[in-house]
Image (cartoon, rainbow, N blue to C red; front, top):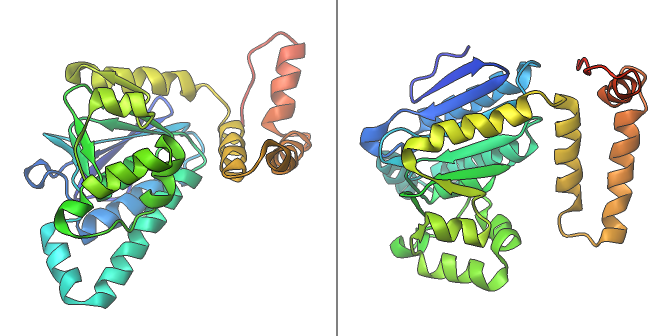
Length: 262
């Protein structure tokens, strides 16, 4: 396991759990936090036993985005801003491309960079007392983590514009209604709900879930007629090798036994 300072990483039962552990700063993202998140994703990607990743916060917040000291540094030096923005954008892209499903367990406030992180997760569970926001407009700033591409695809063009331009806080129930979150649960039940969802995924084939994520990503913005082309290409590449999980899944079905995933 990597040595992390701003978050914890635990792996048990094929489930990896990352928890931001700077509650006094509302889990704001420092240079070290970005390093730690990259290291945690490295560890998850390198461990073939991991089938799902849960990301959550501690205290009152999931994450409120970039740390004030980092912002002071970035606003004083455009080169720092460019490096930090590129790192945050790369992290959100990496969450989308991770070969396992990523569940965001949003325990509290999530805004700016924290909001951008949860938008990049595959599934979002949110505490019923939590609130989320882009929030950049309140401070005369604009997003830089890919949210202007992701949010309109989730909530639609007009809703996304309203959320960005007003910067308003969105309560948990509305986040579910808009499709940003899958489900809202009582705060005290959030960890159990995330574990239950993760358990439903932990027995699945990692290769299968990774291939499905690639199919879904390739279909973004395409018509059905266009999207079926990369979908079939991914399907053929996945099921053709004799030692693939696709082949094993079919053999297990025909032999009436549980599959033995690689």
